Length: 210
Length: 230
Image (cartoon, rainbow over all chains, first blue to last red):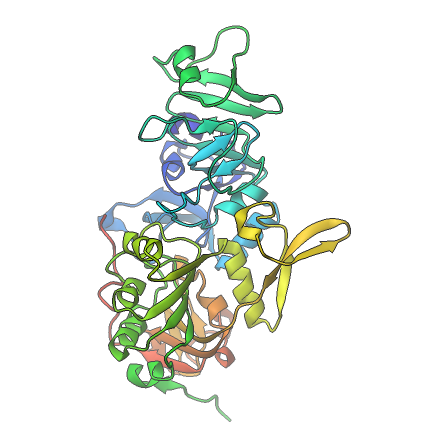
């Protein structure tokens, strides 16, 4: 699924990869691809992840992973970083999710009383990036669906998610609701439907696999 | 003429902070966190503090020592995801936690440092994060009023500085540091590269000296300023 999500990134884009699964997308981008990665803690021009032996303790991404900076990269303060986000310079962000609703609502910052890691930069990324995609497991650890008719948790952003990459499928958010676009290898349409907590439209014809 | 020197011992500098103080602390994770100044604050033991920082570091590091020592009343942060201890204290009601969207926190601090009362923004409208904020309508569109933040003190980590308080930050250790260095009444800077005044290229200075009150030259960085192997 991470490799599949990486194929959504097009040359020339400025992209922010959120904390968690999305951060791993960087390792699936073709070498030599012309793309700018923004990390909100203060770098445009994120390069490959570094192992501990080659890490620089002053150079991390927003998830705390040790990274490198590409030639031509720029270090920026947190106000400049979010000026880039809010002014619409980001072409794409990929974020994690607790829940995604069929209208594109996203909840990923708070499970009241249990786990409230905080919003971080997610709210501004989800509201202001030109395209917002989610990378998440299709269900939570207990098997409950994360793709729902309506989010039950406090929202991060309203109606902003366009596409969801999961371990089971690629699902688009459309004005009519969720539409199945691709299936993970070995997964059936029926399995995706039963793991989805909202109506899932199935287009006519073969569903491609990834 | 020459520019004034602001070099202090770490004990002198941190002693300017009193009980009940509000304190901005630079850093995002390890990079840019003034661990030495935090450790001195733990040693001096000021109580009932309000801490504004991007995050609360990780359990057993940095801000977490202030939490463990019972010195913190309230945290204003964007994220606590790497510090399970802080989340537990929040859930038990031991500390008050206010979450702020990261770029909004940065801009509220920037506004405070720039002598502004606040700014208006459409971030978070319709979500819990905008609840209770004053609404403003401009040209028919709705915005929330975000108030500026200023604190009694700011603790800053700089890669390089001089005795006047001109500062340079390194890589992703810049983050909130230059913003917070403008937004507090008492700005304390730690650096292990404190140079004579005049030795930093004026064109490469990120934060100019007038914002800084106390400069602490370190022999070495705190052991927590290091690679974290997870």
